[in-house]
Length: 242
Image (cartoon, rainbow, N blue to C red; front, side):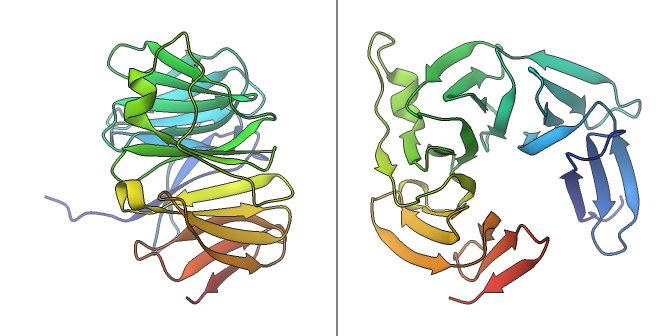
């Protein structure tokens, strides 16, 4: 049996001939290329280790590839509008997509649309589940970060407007990325914004840090969750100590 291989899966919204590429982490060798159009930022997701999903930039569909197939047969999942961001639950049971100002939640096993959440005032730009899948977080061009309990969303009365568990409005310009750490309902969430700040909050409602930097386009942290890493508009990255 072959030893496990570390790979990087990436997209490039400026690449006209492919949606996703798989690179060997240490050598930089190109292992696979998935073709199907240009995938947009925050539009790449792995579903239960079996499927690769890519939301097509400016298009109203998601491309899906079964990872175990050698012929790379592409399937298309039609959506009500262009998908601005995409994520999947850690257990592979649910798919979340941002479409305009709304969040769409689908059940994977049936394909049913379970709920549409409309609490953002401008396009949803980022979606992430917590490590245990108990919560998910949305962020948008309206500068808001919303934390949702998945259990509450699934059990909500369809006739009522569901409220998020937490609402944060600390940014002054659109949010470009967010990252959820481990810890379930106590997880820490890091956000990056065009207002040249990165902020962190916990799902229990507390703020923890605020950093001023060049306009950040991406952010992540390790499971502790320190130190932090950020990517900027000038294509550079920084690792920031705790």
